Image (cartoon, rainbow, N blue to C red; front, side, top):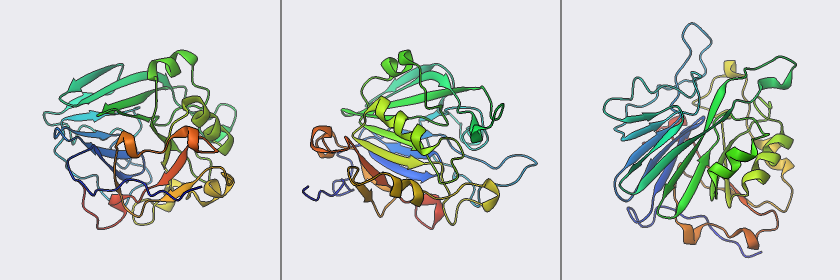
Length: 258
């Protein structure tokens, strides 16, 4: 297979710029200067802290929240004049379209009766021909009508860690197969400098090792990537159908946020 580098920020402003902030939080800026955050996090009130850093006070046009857990729903401190999407619906602003598709939260830890049977929304983001789906903490067995409502997916963000906090490796593989994306970005795992041991989350080395030779893994070396349709990998050329891109978490270090 020919070695191919993932896109980077070599032409600022020409394509949507995605930054992984850490945990399940992503920040997108479009060429039309629309700014979106998905799943900003906070520490729980009166509980064990999960995060060493406070979520930054970003200037945003849209905030999308997949579900109402503390590690995804810190919109009240960021809201301002932003449009907040946290239930069925969507918004189109300049060159960015966002919609939410209702689904169900994973039953965490896979014990009988464990977890919650709560709503979780799939967030679909489209800009300049690239479609990204952020699944939040969704279950793996997604309803066929939700898959149909989501439609084509180029980039899929999935929650995965070696503690199997939300999904087993097999469930992650099943979710990826349902959406058939070109790129998979892992999220919701332990980051040194951001996540506490009290969270019980672990890293993703075990999961990456489980993928096998058919799935190329790219360590981006940055928290930022551009999303350009003509530079994303083509599924027909990949034995496993997709690549995995491991991004650095901006809030785990001194890196700036876009």
